[in-house]
Length: 327
Image (cartoon, rainbow, N blue to C red; front, side):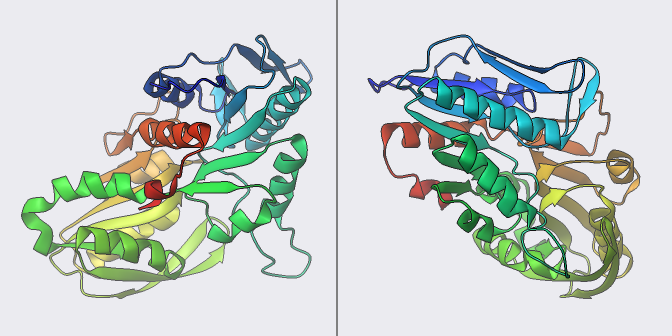
């Protein structure tokens, strides 16, 4: 419960309203009264129905695809909703605006990998800053250097402590028979820190990506024979890489079982069916992106990030350090 004398307001767009409500419940404050939608031609609009003058305002909006009233919306709709909400709040004389973006989209193009590539993450950072945001609160950016793309403070929360708590309990009795596996070389640093916290050894799946959303597993670095394996990644999009890595760990590495965890579950296209048909025992996501409407898959489970974001918002609001949330 927040007891600070200064006014706090929390608003949300349509991409993840359930998370915003859960954060408000943790903080003991009501969700802001606003309407965010789209006109018949697809243009987005926002209307704020309460005063925000001088308030410390937090806008909760993951930039991910979402569904509202049975209509599918793209990541671009989520981004535009965020931008116009920030603009509306800025023009209404909000004291400070923090963009709370549990999942930051457009993060996969964070550098030029070939001639004439855009750096989309930098472009989106510019848009959010120019719209009027004073601060950004997010979780597990696809590339840490994206924090430097902003000219405003960025707090990048870590989802791994939530997984550490989860898997420490689950594998406490068989810790010596369990390993953490990085699904690719680029995720080694994240997986190594995760393995150290669980006091488990680390292995790596070496793969070569042929094209976007497609990969070929090449080799397994480390001995996973007869081990219970935990695959750690930051996001799962179509699920191809994750399911291929799990299959290789069982077929090539002779692992006893494979469980996966990832912060962001985009689950595009055939992802849910692939996970359902895979050798994976379970896939655990954080609810930075809401579950797919009508999704039926016994192998997929979600852990709430509401408490962690509520604590971060409380620290930002109270002007106290958030550093302990990164440990």
